[in-house]
Length: 132
Image (cartoon, rainbow, N blue to C red; front, side, top):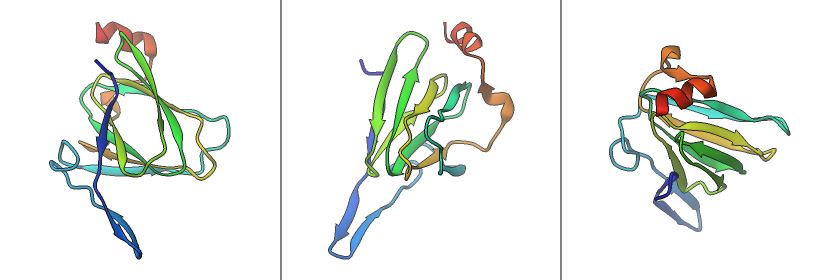
């Protein structure tokens, strides 16, 4: 069974362009309480390196590309995100890292809750202990 869960979004378009709508509890499997995006990541910089105790997120590379490494404490899996109609589900208790950002990458993230520092697990060894 694959650790990575990709969500496909419907793209509506014609010669005028394309529209991708994202609705909570329809296209995204939770109520969306927070939206943020990552841009202008410098060459060689990696992001993430944490897990969440309860937060669930969907990340969508709406421009450019980046590589995700997903880890549930037992297995690791890499996936290249480079399609604005596909999102990666970052479930609770999944360590995630983002690498190899293209210069034009815009990574949009939809979150199931507001920011709460106490929900973060920022130490990998602590994550492994909690994941078992």
